[in-house]
Picture (cartoon, rainbow, N blue to C red):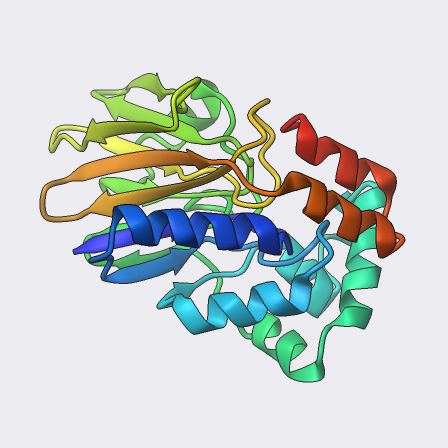
Amino acid sequence: MLYLLLSDIHANLEALDAVVADARRRYPAVDRVLCLGDLVGYGADPEPVTERIKAISNVVIRGNHDKAVALGENLDWFNQAARDATYWTLHQLQAETVDYLRNLPKGPVAVNGFQICHGSPIDEDEYIITSGDAGHLNGQLQSGVVFFGHTHLQGGFRILRGYVMEIPRPMPHDTESIMIEEDSYYLLNPGSVGQPRDQDPRAAYAVFDSDSKLYTMHRVEYDIASAQRKILDAGLPDKLAFRLAIGR
C-alpha cells in the first residue's frame, strides 16, 4: 500500500494545498493518508485546514497544539506567541471542530505493521531531535518503523544493532528516498507541512510504499507570502509570519 504522511500543518492552508497537489501529481495511486498531528496552531486557517484533513485523511492522531486548543493542555510549555495563537485559534473554530480535535486519538497508533505518533512512541510530547534522543528509545520500540512529527525537522534515524545513524532531509533537492531494511529500526519524520524549522522554508511531506519498503521525502514550494499576509491580517504575532520565509 502507498501511504501519504503529513504532519505539523499548523493551520497553513497554502502549504497543505501545495503538498496535496504535489502528492497527487507524483502519486495518483495513494491508498491512505495519515496525519501525525498538529493540524492547528500558529497559522491563520485552522477551520479550513481541519476540514481538509477530515476529508482526505484515513487516520489522524493528535498533536500538542491540537490538545492545547481543544483540551487546554500543555499551555505552560508554550511561549507567548504560541499561547496567543492557541487562544486565537479556539475562538475561530466551530464547536464541532473543537470536538473533533478533542476526540483525536493519542499516538502511537499501529497501521499495517508500522506505528505513527506525534512526539515519540513512548511519550506523545517528547521531542526526537538528536541521535541521542533516538538512541534512548533503543530497546523500547515495538515496531520496526515509526513515523513521528513534532520537531518540524524532516529526516530521521536508523538504529542498527544499537548504533544510531541520521537520515538527512533532501537538501538542496526536492526529493530523497531510502529503502527500509529488515535488520534495523527506523524513526522517520516526514517534516512539517506548515512550519518547517530545518532552515528550508519549503513544505515537507513523505510517502511510504509498504510493499516495496521505499520511503521518500519531498519538499514543495508554496505561496508563503499569502500565508504570511493572512497571519498578519488576523492580528497573530508577527514572528509567526516572518519565520515561514526562513524555515526556522
